[in-house]
Image (tube, rainbow over all chains, first blue to last red):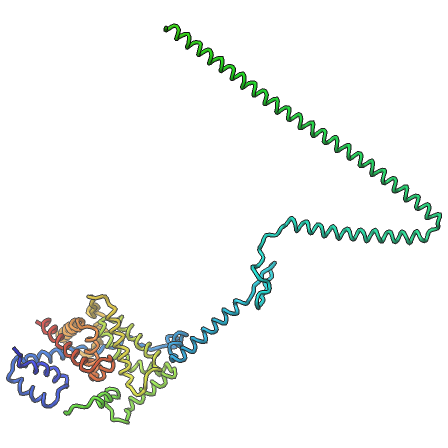
Length: 263
Length: 212
């Protein structure tokens, strides 16, 4: 059942809010005196609006001013204020800078050696991995020793050559007699040196032989000692074995006797 | 009174009740402050704050029903307005733009609240009485009746949804037109009107039943 007052109930709040036109106002004015429910409804809406009006504005508890520190522009704020075109341009520039930095970083070489940091730029000239392979210390040492010995030998040869040259100059200044005497004296010195060297060699040989003999004797004695110990042990084991055998024989004999007695 | 066409209505909503081509001294002063604020003049912006802070604060207070949240929301609204002042077009009304920021902010805060939680300014009766700033000398009985009336209204408003609260606040307390509210909330005009009258009906029912 349609409510005949439904339209007027829609008009009443609009009328109170000033939203109706002249014709609607007139229709409402003529309906309300004859319709107590609509009049009561209007009264309720009016009271509602009056109660809403009791909600006065209150004073602010404080002012809401902005201070320069509160609105300092941040980088993100600046970026957010840019137009899309500028944002895209800035993003592309940053991307290119990052790519370039990465490319350059790849071509930079760092070397830290004995407390010194060295930077170099460009492609690597030595292919492969930076050397961390193990160094043959013994071969390196031998090589060094060889080099040093070679150098010393060369120096000694130069020194001997120089002495010979001096001697030859000296001997050239001497007379024939003096040269003969010098030659004889040198020969005697050489013979003495050779003799001394022979004696020394013999002594060394004898000492070596004696040392070897002593060493052999010591080794032999130790071996004999070990052999005797081993022999003693074996003898004891044999005795022990014999004793066990005797015991076993005795036990068997006893068992046999017992068996015979039982029979 | 004949109905105005939509174009003229919207123009009036944007430009206010002024003749086309003419600007009131107050409006021109506000425009000057806005221009200065767009150039970074914080002092000019604070003049705008001084002019509108009471309206925005009371809007937030009635919607949020909490003095602390209302203060926080008001400060956030003005901060947001200052940060985005360069985007404001001078052919629009500053108040409309500001109300939009405020309404959206309060609606967001209301939606973030846990469901079923209701706030009430009556929880701090003493603070409320001070904040009310009752200047007029009233009899004790009238004062009590007034307080009771406000209490009932607050309770009834609390049961509206955030969109309804915003529309009632802007229409009844800020005295904006439906067209302005439609622009602020970016909602069709017919939707705004139907929501407002539905809210009024809810308030009538709730206030009528509480009175009994």
